[in-house]
Image (tube, rainbow, N blue to C red; front, side):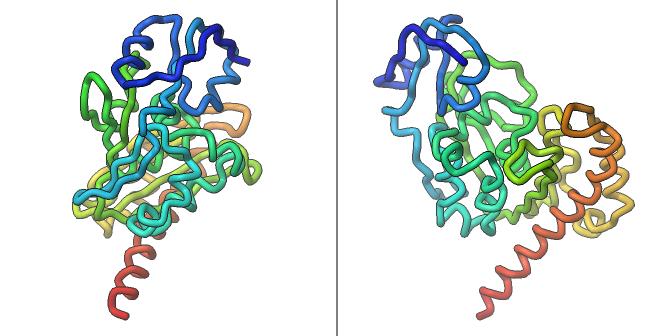
Length: 266
């Protein structure tokens, strides 16, 4: 269990940033996974008063505040309408409703959890991270970086995409054994593999539909992806099921697109 001597409700993002420059401080976000890590810190910095818990639709897509809960992402009507209810389907298996009502998207993205369904989906959707000091950074770049002391304020998600997530779990609410997210945009199809058990990685980007539907090409892509072993599964098992999840995720994108096209004709 994590222990903090001081708990500060920051009054501005500038105050939070200054406090977080000390190694003895930590941003608590939802404080769900963090509290279980056993760290001892002088100061816990809470961003709850900074209005970073909103989901806003823009001309180009969506801007999601870093303190937005996973439950809010799961249930937001506009967000799910725009992406074929993929957020509802992808986030529903994460632990339980009480957990998702407190865990935040910023905490998930900052932590770069190898098992994160959230990061896999956002990576497939070509999301961007907005940092207080550095500004806008592609999630694909941020995902590979080491932890630093900048603060995520928002996540930007481009619109005009159809996405699907597939996962395998030992039990319904367990951490995934393997997760695959796919998104189709005008640039082609992007496929992301997470819970490998390392950080989510882009397995294919800009893939043509004809190639994405070819199981031999999907198997080749999976063969180039690194997998590992942990208590949930071995490397060989993950490598075996990866092409299946990838093919299902691509199919899910196409079914979503076909459904919306049919609804537009009605």
